[in-house]
Length: 434
Image 1 (cartoon, rainbow, N blue to C red):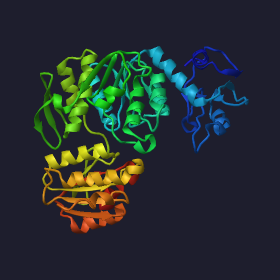
Image 2 (image 1 turned 180 degrees about the horizontal axis):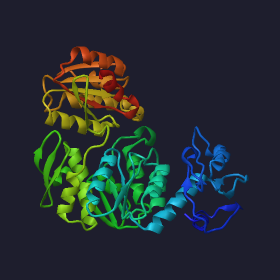
Image 3 (image 1 turned 60 degrees about the vertical axis):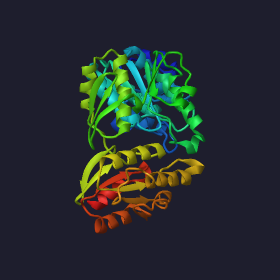
Image 4 (image 1 turned 180 degrees about the vertical axis):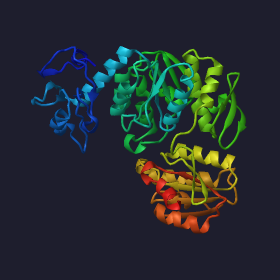
């Protein structure tokens, strides 16, 4: 950006100026700063980027943002450096004027973002939020990393409380918004599903386009305040033609689509991608190609082999809804399996109840095989296996002891299915088996 663009976007107090047509790159990390960069120091609970301003100048930065009176090269003072970063990102978003598709949801938002990106890439130069960089800093990074010729930007938006998605909406100004679902993730912070729905529906607050796409959910319909076109979808809209462990074929709106992923929830997530593509004028055959090119990302239904065991690792995150969808898929599509389930975090005062309900859901499942094995790991997950008596179930306090049991007692012809919150580090079980 040119300095005059920075001044226009942020309106800082100029403590020391320079030629306003000077081109600079915005950098937030002194470890990767280059000659001619302009340093924007961010602050967090455990770090303060302003402490590294002198280091940034030593490494070649021509100037910096600051929140208090100090001069290091070209110096712009602002009340809040994160707000300055967001304003700069919004300036670039409007300057390049790409179409922004914003995606959120209690579960499935990253998969939905990946599916939408895979579809839209068949017709448009598409850039997406990397991994799960779905907070304010990640939003800015994504907008700045998007190439100048980007036509569609697909942004994932996460939250842990009210107001956070509204902020992301304000600075990204979406053209199309998508909500994959409303569940109980973060209910410990928000208190109720109604509040979670309110938080998710903030995505439309600063929307400038006229299309809202969401899972067919009465709570979303009741909560969302949007005057434009609303498109709702669910598995009930689909004629499922084939279900396999790693693929699906289904008919939707008269067209047959194939997906390199199993499970009804993946079919549902793909409906968001199909509707986004149709809304942006894509042909059905383009959408078909884009869906077929999708492949699950790391720790989302990731197939690995460790210690002779075939493992499906879906331990990126977990909440009651995603756990039940996971169980449905395993029970319907596989024959010889062991479930390895760890704690679900951030479920608030009813966390024990949610784990017990999952145990009852498994125990009463119509597709539960008599030779199944269910292993729970963690203090909360113990409540899952305590409710299971139709099949063998065991509890372990940590991944190390669970891995030791599996190595010595579980037949290698059983496929292991791993699911739990990220903080439970189920990848350590894979390492131990290796």
